[in-house]
Length: 440
Image (cartoon, rainbow, N blue to C red):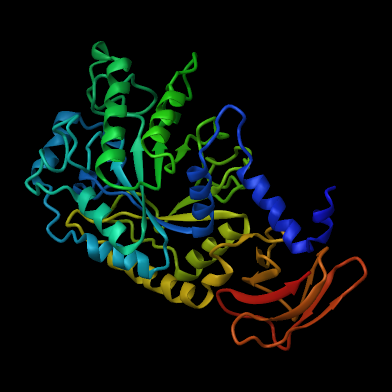
């Protein structure tokens, strides 16, 4: 052990170890200093909003409607001629999301249906050329994000239910693609040309969020997506741009973040996140209601309490929360979503200090709640406690304990093994009762 390490406090050692663990590198990929800084900023942000929006919103049946109903791609494409989101207002979207306390937006540039939500030169099947709206919504959204200081991430689908060149996998088998016209080389070039547009014409992009590699996870012979070359292209165009892939497996070289779908890291309740937790910055994506894209009958929005506790729960595992909203076909964010965004913003303005810029706390997730840490400050987030005492197995010395709101002292005792017992005058209640401890 180097001499200077001996002088570090317990909390500083914890933070140093966490940082080293989080950003340890795969030996076959060497990220630039700009990329490493972007990873740290990403990890500090803790909260982002996912926006699944495309012509599928016209059907109001979710983003998988084309696949689920086996709609021929020629018939499906007719929806583009009626897509006119008259109420789309990039400034209103970004303002509502920023006010909610989110630090970045991830927008679906091209989903599995192949429709591009920007003015691409690679296909006429896009919002400018194929719709009467004739506006580049991505350009408007990018400009507003940059103006308001919100990072913009872009979702991009690897699979395609419309283009014949795509080598079909286990989805989209009833959408009418011609298997005789499969041409992986042409499709790969198409994707890379589109990615080049996205990373050249829309300013700084915080991350490319890939999805769809799992379309070939049942192949008898592993499918080569040529990811290494594609990732290298992204990092060449924008070195600080992070690469993430929702492939439901351990990250591969070239990826800068690890994504978990509908589950927190280390959990697998939804059946999509059983992969090992890597040392990269972590993000879990979750829906605000049941679907990703707008579905008119899906009004089962999660309560504000659930959303706040999910956000804090993610932070307690050292992960970001990417919370999804499916905008309506008219260009509006659903009223129920806006209501919850407002509530999250109010809570974060009061308590965001215990979430933003924190690492996973000293104690892993418990039935009563989670912990987060920032330097020598340990935050105890209590979601539900059945009595007036809480026992915490700690190794660090606790100097002070008090409520985060109001700074009222909390009684505590710490034994020789480090275990701390908090004693409250009343059983803690509320969405998240936070106790702050100063440690050394």
